[in-house]
Image (tube, rainbow, N blue to C red; front, top):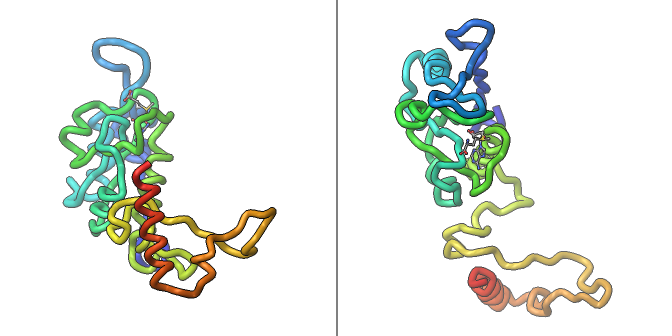
Amino acid sequence: MLGTELELRLLNYRDTTPLKAGQVDDDPYGGGAGMVLRVDVAAAALDAAYDGSPEHRVVALTPQGRQLDQQLVEELADEKELTLLSTRFEGFDERIVEHLATDAVSIGPYVLSGGELPAMVLLDAIARRLPGALGSEESGLEESFSAELEGGLEYPHYTRPAEFRGWSVPDVLLSGDHGRIAEWRREQSRARTKH
Ligand SMILES: C[S@@+](CC[C@H](N)C(=O)[O-])C[C@H]1O[C@@H](n2cnc3c(N)ncnc32)[C@H](O)[C@@H]1O
């Protein structure tokens, strides 16, 4: 439980597998290298956790899924409950993605060894969108990809010292003129987004 907003539960396929000796995966039909997570094992884990099929979205993390972006993060952050499924080795039996999951999500066009990091990436991106997640040191509103910045990149930030090795902070930020500062930031955000 983080604050009162987020309750996390970790499920291990091995704890509920119907197979002997904690087996969770098997050889691929048709041959080839690698082990595939079994559909009966994933179903047993979901049944045990939710007493049947979950009524909320179940996200399978796979490089073949919809690529994660801020829009998808916002969409998933609106859900009351979510289940994330991940694997190692060769991946999921396709029936898990087709029938047990509601969504397939990729964190980017590259392949990692397992779904632990993708699950944590998605979790972190969602958690910081929940009410009360961010302290006053960080703004969750005006940041890269937010609606406030028209989906674009955030403007640059500077802090003290105002000058270091001849590298100075743009004058406008020291001017105290909030209208000009806001305009400058909007321009910077737009210019960065174009590149
Ligand atoms: C080695 S990968 C399997 C790759 C799969 N054989 C393929 O070629 O698409 C093992 C697991 O890591 C996770 N994974 C790896 N890269 C990922 C990515 N970019 N996004 C989401 N999950 C990923 C998934 O759970 C995946 O099933």
